[in-house]
Length: 54
Ligand code: SF4
Image (cartoon, rainbow, N blue to C red; front, top):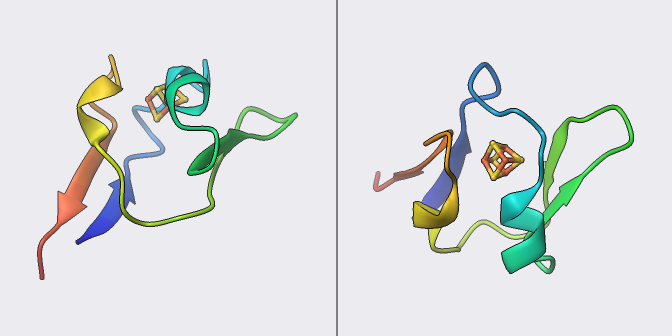
């Protein structure tokens, strides 16, 4: 499954990075960088992360 980031919902606060820094990084401009595509997306409080099961 592939992680989909809804960048319109992502606030860039970085909770995903704090719980899975190998997967996520918030850049200096607040944009989210995905380092890996497989991760538990339930930690995102803004529900900006979903999985594409196709
Ligand atoms: S936890 Fe969610 S809202 Fe926060 S930076 Fe990560 S993807 Fe964006």
